[in-house]
Length: 334
Image (cartoon, rainbow, N blue to C red; front, side, top):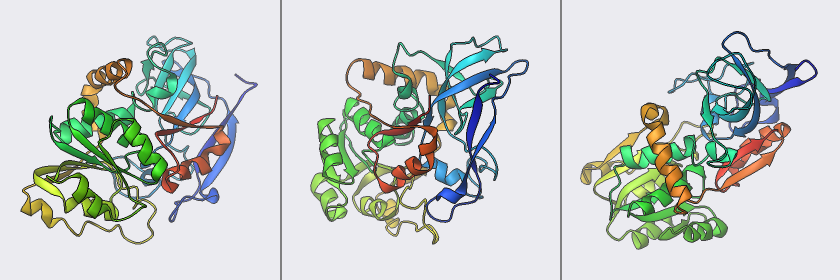
């Protein structure tokens, strides 16, 4: 490995608003050599997720922030190219959290083997990875979605939203997606969503009244802000509001704005609950089997938005916040 170099994006400054080029430092280091019990992983794909913006803030959260000077945290899929760990062999494909870099050594505790014969490698970062698991547990464990109920999902053309809408339909729910622009809404209809609302085209509240005449039983929120407020006005009795993310607020320079229509929770005896997918780690395998079965049966269609090259990272990350991606966004780096 001595002839190769490891290129890494490190956090150089805490962003204010949208991350900018000067918030990153691209460094070149020797490729790490695995010690006893370790493996060397060549990173192939890097997951780009809205949560990364929160990890860049020096603030209390469900996970420690990335420290200044550290390699940026990210989910990855890669190939073991050298192993001193009996659990892994050279040639194994693994998912983990190796970060925004080309190579990483690991003691193996954060790695899980995946089989490219089951699905293409990028899929294990998307619908058969944390994205799919987030949708699955948010909808079924937190949202308790049941057959015949109306499910509304915001950010519906994003990585999580696309899965939420489809698996809700698989379980017999009526599904309404909220997305930005006619192309994304048309894609949602192709996937079988019962209705698609273009939040850029008009009054979201009015559209929800039209498409959810009996109210919303489960609202799966990925965006926060005005769209969350609009959904709260349409809750059905005993509705469940699932707080997965709030991408509309992540780059705000003013304090995060909470929902003004929260009293709807009282009136409708509804509940609002946030969750983190890591809380369901002991149920991952069973969920992935079910998601993989739906995919193999042609019931679950997964879409990846793949950007080429490690150098593209700073601008590619911004695609999330500009609403430019459809499906799971990631970098292909090898």
